Length: 169
Ligand SMILES: [Zn+2]
Image (tube, rainbow, N blue to C red; front, top):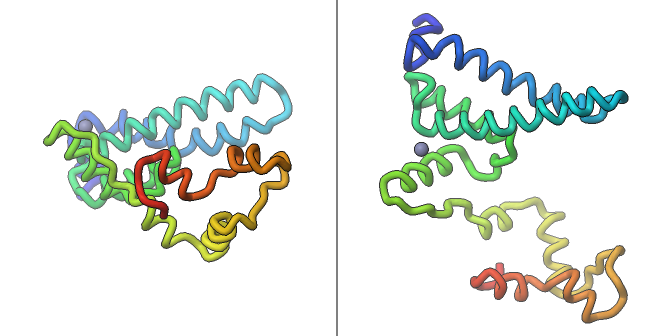
């Protein structure tokens, strides 16, 4: 199978390859230019980062619809790569895709990200920090000393859960 047969539409080979290359290479280049010395390189980096973040989000949508490649696995792999560019990689691409299909079929925007499961699967140092925070032993070094202001700055998991309308994690 040639590379042009890999793509879903023959007239999409050149534009999609160009846009994917721009997104894949432009994002790290843009990030690198953000810390470059002359201001005009910072401005160029800003434009590159903004464009590649937007394009990667559009690509996630197209890969979710299996619109770029014929093979679903190739679409899923590229979709996962795009989630790593724009920071939506906390949820697996298959979950994002399933959610998006429900958005179209059921006309409902459902959440598929399991925050509780994510926290329970998190590294031990992260869970330990959360546990100390629950017991009130953790204090943010930048927060004020007043307990009332401390509570507002560093709310307990119960306060956070109540604010979001679910049981504490
Ligand atoms: Zn869609």
